[in-house]
Length: 430
Ligand code: UD1
Image (cartoon, rainbow, N blue to C red; front, top):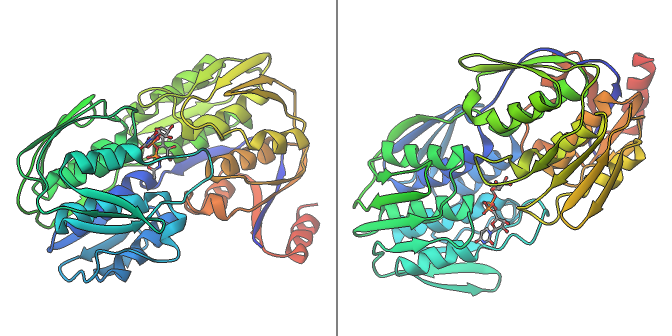
């Protein structure tokens, strides 16, 4: 079983290149099957969720040609199945994007209900409501979503909750529906905009992505394209928190600083120095950082996917901070793990009350999900002594070469897969 072992206490210093956005890439890859022509996608992050999705795309009959670890050419001209049932696909959240993509193109889809991190109940009722409004018949049969339509017809759809997944999924199906769809109360996340731009580059007619209302004029066909995925806002934010928590100095490169504003603002508020460049952000941690309050909200609010990393940073800041999680109900599972390292956090309902401590001490902890796992690594790198993080498969789902990027910033961390290797690491590091 792979683990990360690290010896903390070093400030992380240097520059790090940020990979393409996982959540944008997942939507884009699924949308790539909506044309029969070649689609070339670049700046893909080389992470497990992406590789699983590519396997599933090949499984249903599309040609998937890996040009290098960040570039792929997809041709979905010969898809033989509108039923996706790969044993892995059930494990990733974004498998639901096959519903919108297949329904749009073939007016028929059969996709297992999605898995993904256990961070809350994560219903997909809004996705299904959208497909039904476009004229599809949608049923849940033996754990799968089965959707069929004779014709998809544009409609006026109001989302009851702001959902990234539902916005992207309905947008995909509506891109190939007849007539106009107006989608209200939509998510405005950068990856929603990126998927819309990608679809438009294939000939779709989507306007308003990035605002509360998206207007889609259906087209009959999409064509091939070449597209580069935007940088990962959450990966960048994770390194920014690593700079703050370890009192280091990190420049995240190849980013869109505007996408990071909510994170930059909070780090500035606790006393970090933030310098913005055209496509980079530098975060300088300070010996004395202080508390603040955070509430997770849809974009442009503070992202729920950054909540654990920021909470770890606040757990090492002076004073009491309150972190309110308003998107997913089960996102504080790292709190017990952090307590083993000396963190002092009490959770009541959807609020974590954090009493900042001077330092953490290393311990053996377990990653409960993707982002919380990354947060525990940050905690370990800030802690005195050795920390072992178990269940790092979660982290590998969303962070490319995480330990290598951290090593390049001076972190003493290694991925090991046996007790013997862990002991060797300790012996070498001393
Ligand atoms: C996506 C991201 C995830 C991120 C989340 C919020 C991907 C693959 N995952 O997840 O990393 O944490 O956005 O930024 O892109 N909801 C409903 N009904 C629905 C859909 C959602 O009630 O049909 C609720 C959810 O339970 C949650 C909220 O809406 O409380 C937001 O969820 P949503 O934006 O859909 O998250 P995901 O797309 O699953």
